Image (spheres, rainbow, N blue to C red):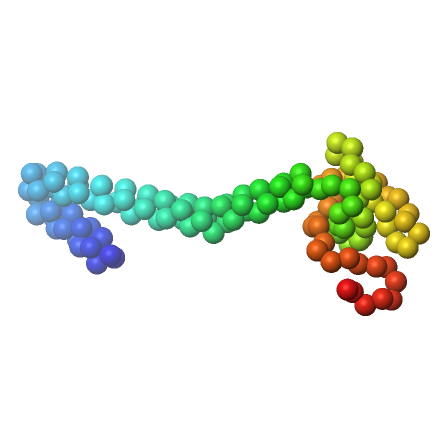
Length: 130
């Protein structure tokens, strides 16, 4: 690929050195097109790579998190972003009330503060997880 690009720039330089006006015009036209492609092609490739490696997976993950938060219901065992395990007791708009610990202490959290819904139950004492 680079040999092709260097070959074009060499041809343009030789055409300019020869002093032939017709060849110089054709050489400059090819050189400017090749120069433009060499500038634009890497930028386009970088945008495509960023899209497939960064942007697309992030949007997919955000969609999964939104679906998980929308599917919350009372009785679900959840973990907050602060590491608190609890059971959802009520949901009002963007506020979620969790029952935490053996004494079922109620705590209020924002909906976005829920990290995930737990599959297995977690107790806050020394019992082994089921």
